[in-house]
Image (cartoon, rainbow, N blue to C red; front, side):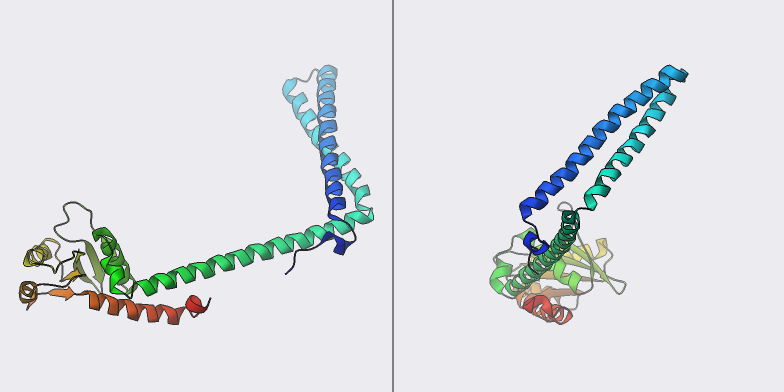
Length: 257
């Protein structure tokens, strides 16, 4: 849609601006006359009937409103008889439709940019370098978001006195605690022992130890026959890839929009 041109309505833009100025001037003059007459009526009412200031003020106020409406409507009625008035109103309607269309297009553009940003971020999450670049807190937030998208109810624990637990998740009446490790080296036995001790403290059904740098053999041995799942970076990326496909299926415009 192209922006309406004033020439399409038989006038220049400057002509419409001047006409709008006349309308504004009429409103200002009507208000000033109404105020003057209002005070005059207030004074006359008070002097003639000695009815008190409150009643006089009320009468003056109502009179001012009525005067404003009568003067304004009367002048605008005659102005509306002019050919430029009809042209101006048509131009205003067209401009209003154009502005609404423009806002709608801007909203569509913002949504497309948001989808594009989401898609680009999803692509980054498919690579090891993205996850290994995260700080400890960033890793916790990203992993909690990933599990949330898998349908878990997720909450991050406080930074202090967390008993080695970073995330608490629930799904199908099962409670799961998660410890996140963004260390540059494989996770050692101390971390999994702490997590195992937290199972009883949080009365959880299962624990997950997630690491971007893998696990030592001692950790793998300790996790055997215990309700502890070791989640490696390869598994995290695999979950991410499957969720990305699901999201694209749900929103065909995610890539093309």
